Image (cartoon, rainbow over all chains, first blue to last red; front, side):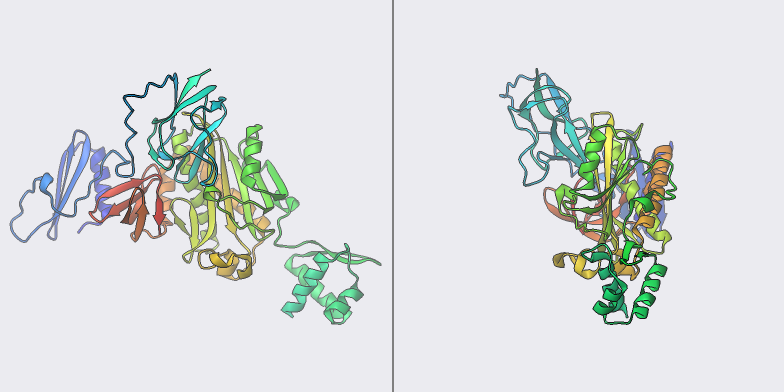
Length: 169
Length: 323
């Protein structure tokens, strides 16, 4: 059986190559790597002593290693659906400069940095986004009033995801 | 013998008057004056500087393990890190001082170091035990050109590798618990707290705070923490010269930052993985729900890769891991 690190290495090499289909078989284990739409799809399955059967990748039962190009699956939370009824008047959105966790206050015991209705200057800290223990204090960057908070405390946010809406002054 | 010497150090450094006479020392320790003299010579050999003034007595000028501004500046072998050194006896937190200085325009590489922090900050301002002379607490102001905000979190990992490298060179086996805690024999020895002021596409400054437990004895740690944290002294039995350790660490950190800026994250990633805590072991990940996963490594961003029970790989940027 290939080690996970070896599979990882294979994926990387194939990803960088022009190969679109790769099969490796050894000691009863077969691994097939296919590149589809530029992404690497990995299917690995234990092979019985019977003649090798090419397994359709959709039905690959166990030992499936999925290495997706999209790096933030599972931990990511979809940006909230915009309320169709909300007719907030805004002309600026404060967006997240990185993937991470949104914190509305400096510590769990403190009040939020800002709430709806708060006036902000361009250098007012409005929240923290944390990734890998890097705490990024986000500044408003515009002078105005917070008219909508788009994410909840502790929520995971994406790069470029809007966090606040501001009506500039 | 050991006890007498400890009491002698106490008397020489904590006397209510600046100087204490040889006679008084002899009386208090209940040993002869020539025995006092022998003990003092032994202390001098250990690196204590003891000043003797006729008709006044003796006092300790510097001890070998305490931080001192002069000793820190002396022969600091870095090009840019810590050449601008802000030394303070006692601060609430070196992070706060560094933030203030950075806002006022302090230059790239400025280092704030304090003998004692009264409100040392950990993640979300958890208290970090930082009493006088026991450990190293310092914050570096970085203004890395060409590093986008989304890459800046890698700096935490860069610093962790630098610290681990330094201790590895001194035959101390350190593991890094993702992303930034340093462990020795399964207990926490050091932590890194990185804070940033950034706009969407430009870093204004980064404050990289590092705290390391150095010369703590058991009684210097909170009782509730004793099975979770430790100090280098407790693990190695040695006492460390804080000035020298900090200067050597700054050299190591500077070299790692330069490597990161010049060549990117890939080399750092390899080094980080060689120190990874619980690599290949099962941990519990707490995101929206709790689930078990095996530590697998880090990716090109520095995010933790874990494999769940269905052999699926997850990239974690921000998650509570129950190790």
